[in-house]
Amino acid sequence: MTSMMHDHITALLQKEMREDGRKPLEYRKPIKVEYDISPKSAEGSARVTMGDTIVVAGVKLEVGTPFPDSQDEGNLMVNVELTPLSNPDYELGPPSVVAIEYARVVDRALREGHALDTKKLCIKEGEKVWTVIVDLYPINDAGNLFDAFSLAALAALKNANFPTFDKKTEKIDYKKKTKTPLPLDKSPLEVTVIKINGTLMVDPTIEEWKSVDARLTVGVLENGVICAMQKGGPKALTMEDISKMVDIAVEHTAKLRKLL
Image 1 (cartoon, rainbow, N blue to C red):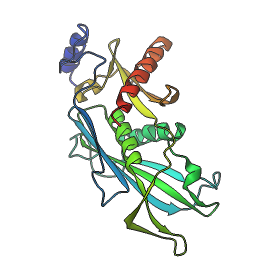
Image 2: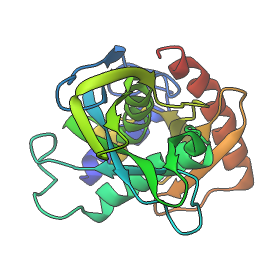
Image 3: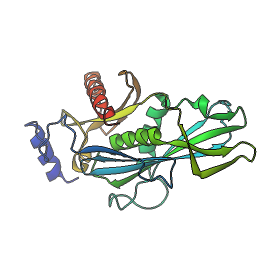
Image 4: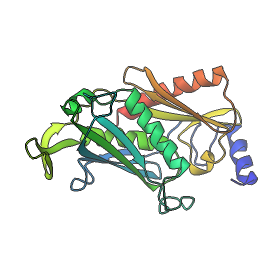
């Protein structure tokens, strides 16, 4: 981020304006959720458009062994792959620190928000359970991947159905989907609020993202209960900042959840 662009962004914010004409607490338009975009390669899938940002999510189901400390529960995994086609700042290769953070933040809200009833993913206690894998990919990274990924992940989970599983042969027939959906119990969603030069904002563009002083991603349940938070950015947040950011996140997650 050049100092000239940073100065331009902060100068606009002093007038409560942004370079694309929005107010600080407005999301880009359109915000669109499309389901079942990849029915042949995933058990559930979704595409989310948020302004110029486009991401896709796919849900795969595998049968494996439970973790030692949860013998009667299935597993959840979230993966993020950042491709150069979506943003020239990304490189091919092993997951970067940025990709790992995106995956962990989305995973934390789903896990701590108890999105899935993991006990219903158990096939045989101590031996066989379903593992739910959520893969997230940006098609065009124009900013605010945290929120777009969170919305896409939840949409894909809502879209997913179990494939046919033969308990005798312990084989999965991915070509034959059942009509049984995943045991989705709750709907945690995340909203990221950023702070630039004292102004709180939502849905940053890629240029605004590079000017962030601090950010807070907040996972919120349908009833407004906070289930996860992740702070980022080089500067500190006051308790007053955090309180305001949480209130903003609760308000906007309610709006985003209506799109599902």
